[in-house]
Length: 314
Image (cartoon, rainbow, N blue to C red; front, side):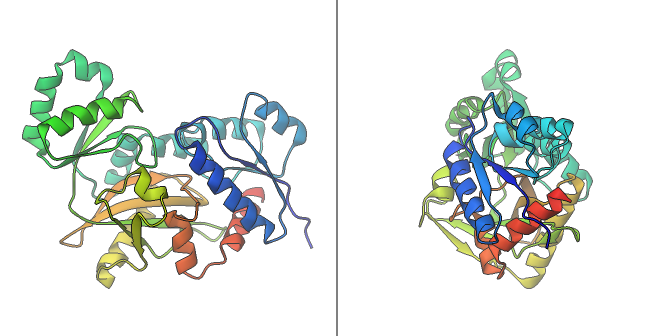
């Protein structure tokens, strides 16, 4: 029997999603331990690269959210150092982390995504904020959604129902990113589809429907127990679920993702799925859609994590 791989889990970091990362990391550690894989949990800091080069673990799993784990920088360093890791490669991570670029790539692959415009903070100011907002409202129309061009866990995201909302939303988004994505808000059913690939190609886990009690799937709704109702399978027709799942797989492949991802779409009243964004390291807490999807589909979650570690090390 092959020896158990030595795994270093990276959790924490300095992003706005630090606490979620720590919670996810502990759950991954517990899942791997249930399959006899011992891990060391490490908070990334200035000593990390020297530590990894000296310790030479078999696999690193960056259970990191936000820029510190998902913008491709850390993964690029791991690639340069020849250290195997769980998750998408650096290039795919960079593309997915940038929401406007991800939308463009997925759209070119044939998946619909809401009409949008991306504005940098400098362009917003230099071109005249009020004129820009007037143009946006005239062309994209309210309701809208504004989100940082980079980021996760719905931080910095605002649901816009008026011109005044839009002004405040831009300011809010710019506190998280130098660019803001303004997107038409599609009315429909929001679903998350987890994609796993343990060596035999990507497989879509049965999607999870999201119904936040507040009406908005914001940070609190994502990570506060009882704040959101989840439905697996979604309360949609079999055909709508099938098409949405196919589109999620298309998005995963088009972005070049591997091992584990979560694709978020919203299905409109006509059953058309619209791509919203992709996560290269979805939250794995007890209230995260990925963990819920794996449980609902009958997966041994720890077994999935162990399989991901083994395929990363092979």
